[in-house]
Amino acid sequence: MQYLNILYALILAIYGYRFLKSDGRIVKGALCKNESFHYSGTELFWCLTFSTGLLALSANVGLDLMAIRLLVLEIFCIIGIGLASNKVVLSASLKIYIIYLLWLSIGLFYAPEPMYGIRTILKYLYPLLLCLFASATVRDPEVFFKSSLCARTVGVVSIIFAFVPYIRRIIPGVFWYETAEAINYISIMIFSLGMFYFTNLKRKNLLYTLLFLAPCLLWVFRTSIMGSTIALMAFFFIKYKLRSLPIILTVVVLGIVSVFCIPAVRQKMFYDDNVTITDFVEGNIDEENINTNARAAMWEHLEKNFYQGHETLGSGTGTVQAYMYHNKDLFGGLTVPHSDFVQQKCDNGLIGLIIYGAMIFFVFADCFRTYWRARSAPLQLCAIVAGASIIGVYATFYSDNVVNYSMATLSMPFGFYGMMLGLRRTEEEN
Image (cartoon, rainbow, N blue to C red; front, side, top):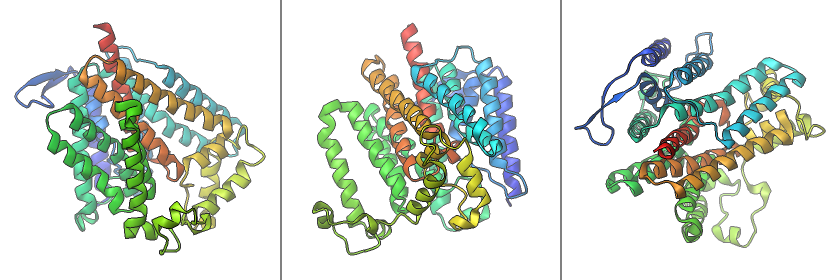
């Protein structure tokens, strides 16, 4: 059955190319089905690409289909940037992103196996290309709504695949792993919350918000629970500034309560299942009682070998990936470190960690500033979704392989940010 995924990937590539080269077509409105709009070829490609990031289309048939698809999408984004009727919007944040990629490229020269470094760079490159393409293509709020709602629809289908028994066995490898899906849902959850505040469809969008918040709780994915919590805090901070502090405190309290009051979360969080919230308040919880699934030991091993003594520059781009691929038995078969922060430190040192972190901070600041300066509701909505989701997803770098899943994870917040840049440029020109 996995051979079908090759066919699906080929169909998506053919449609993507046809959209890019077409003169466009008439499409029903995103919010009002009685209206129709003409979408250009690049706008059609944007809607297709942004809404299908959750499709992994993996196939264990002797080739890395996901890597091939990622490379094809990057080539298509470059072609799309050239075909777009508008120029890309290169914000200060994206300039820092380019500097980060240049730093990763320098890291290839002292990496023991540069090919692994090239693969790492390609994973970081995709969100930037997607963002630049969005900034040049999405200049109409209609396209923003259409692509976002299509992405949410695909998200709903992925939840059905995840929770309906046996359906994944019938069509395996169509969607990404549950860990990647849960991180993707952070952005869709925030988009749905934004739609709750900015549209009259309150009940519908509140249900969608809860729907995309639920999987990380049901799967007991601590990283995604943390990312969702931080994304919600960022959302309310952007919306209410300092007046959001009581709401943020409430979210923090609910997050802590969920750790101790939801049995599945508590059992996964601690070695001793008898710990209580009183122990937390009184500071009686020892770090040794926190269950990291042996990740802490793995991180310590990697940092000892590739970060200590190389704190400034790291050991070279792709070093951690190469080491883990060649020593699978050392970590129980794991080939990824389950922490992009650790990988950034070991591969490219404190310089790489700081540059990427600075880029995320400037993206958030840009979204915050845009939200409060925007004259139109769609631009405000796009700005708050981009800012909150990128902070939430970045938080998951702590204990997951977010960059490895960039097609499903990083594409969402950077896609929203790119659309925000495009909508903002339209507002500035009018």
